[in-house]
Length: 168
Image 1 (tube, rainbow, N blue to C red):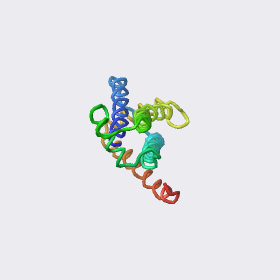
Image 2: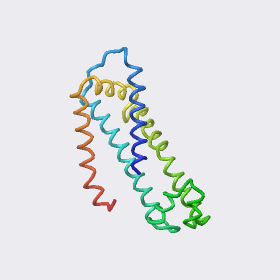
Image 3: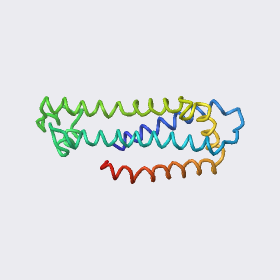
Image 4: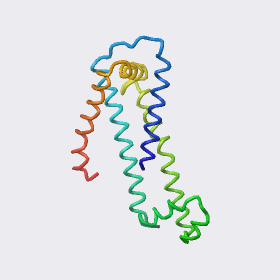
């Protein structure tokens, strides 16, 4: 699970590096509060989407009808080693179910990346130019980064009570 978040963060960092390389020769323009707000909203939306997908994956494991969490962990430790899989007496049904979980887990990085790119490209949500501008300003000015980070944290905190009420 931590690996999924690591991949998602790595992709976001890689996108940031690419954006920085494109704007390296241009001066960072001053960003408006509205642009910072849009950027923080987009990041919060991506973070929330990632949390939902992570919860879905956890449910897929916890609520599995083929094996329980303990058996999942046993299979996970043996996966990739045919001798260990034979030793734990894995069934074809368990193999298929574990592979389905792995496929879902592996596809999440792409799904999250696609979601983020779609939000960045959507001019009504953020727009690529605004994304690049705010991202460059965050790299150039620690105060802008702190402001964006604070807004994201605020949005996450505001969202948390709603989710508890929903039973999520």
